[in-house]
Image (cartoon, rainbow over all chains, first blue to last red; front, side):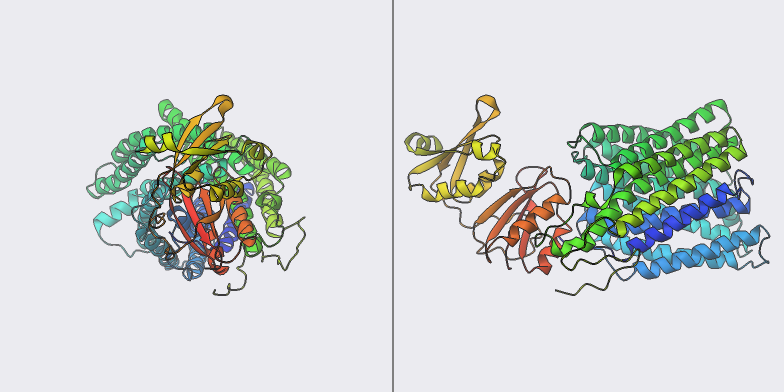
Length: 449
Length: 178
């Protein structure tokens, strides 16, 4: 059993991620991309990748560099790699967004932009995969939440591979028929691997541990969470791998999505039962804001699945796929992300500032670094505006969507202001040599004992 | 065998319920009473809960517990002398960070289960500051205190941590000053 140090660059990942989220929300409010532009327009691609890579993937990478070691009770393989990883990912993201601008005709024709972006992003994600993969590999056999993360990392690799293929095809670098077929029909598979395999599967695995920890609920490690893991892995494997194989042999990849979807639904239903049990069996009666808001995010997750099923039943799924993806991305993944950020930033700041003096002088509690009452209002505004935006998408009311997106900007900015307040140790006296931390950069290298 | 011991052994009574009801920590009182026992005496302890952590600590001193719930949800525990002093303290788990030979008995016991993180860490570091060099603290926890370990090392303490016999519990031993 080993100790875990604070991840030095995690706050920088969080800061970059929040900036990307707010930029994406501002663009949506301004009428850039879907629904003002078509779903497959370059503007929408820019928006989607700003959210998926800039916000969600940077958030998850930053969080995983800190919490994979906690999940497996081992130190991170390398504390040096997260900085070059971040630099590559940010450079790749900027190049990718410029590549989409060029596709949309807003920039001159630089066909090499997308392959360069894909190379930078692949480099950054490979470094993250290597670092997290080595950490997990050294800790086998893995506890269940870590196994979710391990599978999610495989789907991150699959998402990058498909993305790199698209960019090469755009640039005319691909000549193989099979690869061109994947590039032509693999967008759905790329989205399922990214949103389902990488982002949702990580969120599910981590939620088992974080919710149990923050609500003093018993750790779930029985047959049901194992079934969630098994069904989820099988569902994603069938949908993505099966889909690629079908496309290569020129058969409709929808079959794989349907087969994977059925197993996925069973897994999600069991996951819902597990989450309900965590909340029901908690020993902490009054739960903190992060756990309250995680319940909203979970509700939005199940609502988006229910919405998808209803739309499929009505035969109009493909007309409204944007609304389903929006609710998944902003209600479930972003909602959970913001809720957990609120706790993680407070905890990491507390440990950074007060860890060295604990027991030697009176120190504030982690909860003294936050003011939940005022913050709750902005979380509620965030979740309600996501709901309104989803409804506007379903009703194809573009102005309504833009107004709701505007409210999301306000709510996110005010939640971010609360995170800044926490980092600044606002309202807490500094005593005994405790220093205010930098807003999002690491402090001086700790002295070796 | 144990039955015979129980029949012939006399027991010194110790009721720690008032201390517990006042929110106090009866561990030192119990250890004092144990130190004062004659070689043929056992301890009859009354507590408001089944004092599982104590079973291990006193087990290491050659006592075996016999617990029964009494009226009002309280517990009566008879600690019999088994006559066998364990050779050495059992290593608490795989991956112990330091050599555990020659560690003295814990002088402080903290039951940190069911506490909000990071409260267990706060309590352990606060308790260690009050202890003499070489003294050992024993803490029971719901999960490995992974953020505590680097702090223990920085402060020059030695530690071992592993799963407890009680399922879902981890036992941490810290020796002040390494």
